Image (cartoon, rainbow, N blue to C red; front, side, top):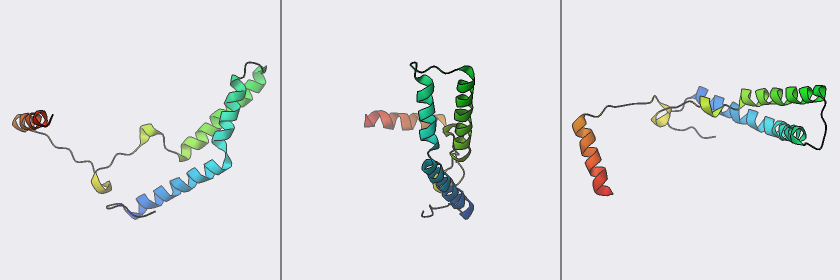
Length: 108
């Protein structure tokens, strides 16, 4: 994995570890097992007593927690600026906003 501009060693090390964990989880087949269990729960032709259903539910929830521990949830993705630096914001004056708006209208 090549360093991106402005990306330090700790950030690169974390990215490498995350990819290694993703590969490990994929090779262990946790996701495939969860899908198989969900199919089993959804199958209306097969009767599941309460204890069996509770066990399946526990396994599914446990595997989801394991997967989410190493694969970040999309809601928690870190936002960075250019080159991995801080996000830079700027405020336009009303005149600048009007000028940009008119230029965009000309382009359309």
